[in-house]
Each structure stands twice: as structure tokens, then as C-alpha cells.
Amino acid sequence: MTHKLKQLATPSLIAFLALGLAACGNDDSNGTMDNSSAPAKSASAESATDYSKVITTETASEKGFALGGVSMGNPDAPVTIIEYASLTCSHCAAFDRDVLPDLKETYIKTGKVRYEFHNYVMNRYDLAASAVARCMGPDRFFPIAELFFSTQATWLANASQQDAKVVIDDMANVVRKAGVSRTRFDQCLSERDLQQHLVEMTSEGQKRWQIAGTPTIIINGKKRGAEAQRFDTLSEIIEDEL
Image (cartoon, rainbow, N blue to C red; front, side, top):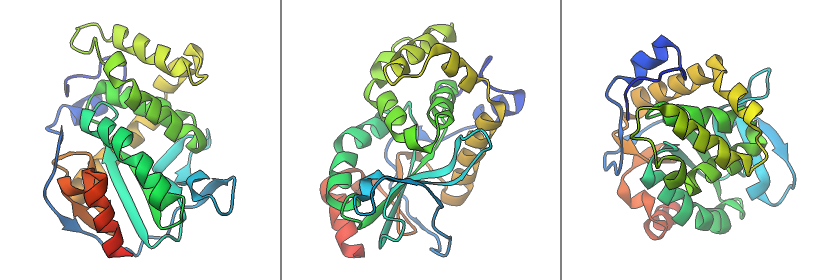
């Protein structure tokens, strides 16, 4: 679904997403980066010891949107896990459902891992969902994103139809459960700067990591393959880094 983004994006965004993007699936290639970048600034911290409640974002817009990588966990954790994911990717939804809860319980809450999420926009519906999640601010980003993941089959059920309005209406109905009104939902979809930020994040991720599939998992500066998408093997990697 990398076709045009009718009524959801500017022509420049349409041109970008018309390019060949990574598919939803496994990526077995590896890469490295330096770890000299400064940790994200804390946006909120409900508890000094329960790192699962520490949400950080690299920066926020004047309107309060979550920009950059949105994180949870100890900012000074010895292991940093970065995930590039698409909200329309079934493999990403599986990671969110099957891996992230154990990762939170075992490593994030204990302060051993800092987890950072970057959107990798794959299509017009992904762009819309990502914009809504980030539009609600860093404190609400993860709950909204997780809601989109858990109900993915519901709001993407009509994605093959020509009329995108059906899918957008389904998306609006999903996030209404999280207290997002239709008025607020529509306002988020109209935020062109936020959409542009998401496209630039995707482009930057592609340039830096040569992403060939989502989710792409980077652990302490090294891009991992499919072994990082299962908790048992992910745990082994983390233990080796500790």
C-alpha cells in the first residue's frame, strides 16, 4: 500500500511514499552506529524507580506533538533498543503483542533497557495512524500506538477499497476508545508539519540503516535480524550486552 496519499498528505509526501519502501517482514542484515548521541530529554517521570513509566522524547513541537524517538525506560540504561516500525505492519503488531510486554517486565522496569520507538511510514494509513498517535503527545503515544496495533485487523479490514474514508472512519472509531474525539482525530490528520516530520523520520531511518523490513531492531548501535523479534533470542542478546 504505497500508492497515493489522497487528502492525507502534501504532494511532496505523496512522491516520497510512492518510492520503494521497506516491506513488513524480517530483515536479517546488520549495521553499526556510534553511541555518542545524547540521551533524550525527559518529558515526564511519574516514578523515579519504575522505569516503565518514564517516557522521553527527543523534542516536542510547540503544539505538544511527540517528535523524534519516543522512549520508555531508564535514560542511562546499559542497553538501548531502537525499533523502527509501521503501525500497519502485522510483524510489528506481533512484536508489540508477543515481545514488548516481556521486554517491559524483565528489562525496562528493572532499568536495564531503554526502548525507543521510531515510526517507519509505509503507506497512507500508516501515516494517518502515526500522526494521530504522535499528535496526542509523548505521554499518550504508546497507549495510542498499542491500540492501533491490537486492533490492526479491524481498521485495516477495508484497506483494499478505493474509498479511503471507510478506513479512516474505522481508525477514528478505534481511537475513540482512548478518548480521542472525532474532532481531535481530524485535527491531527490536518497537521502537515507532523506528517512531514514522520516522512523525514522514515527517510532518515532508511538512509542510516538501509531498512529492508519492519520491524527493524537496533541494539546498542547494531542492527539485528529476525533473532531480535523473539523474546527468547532477544533476551540472549540483551544479556550479552549487559
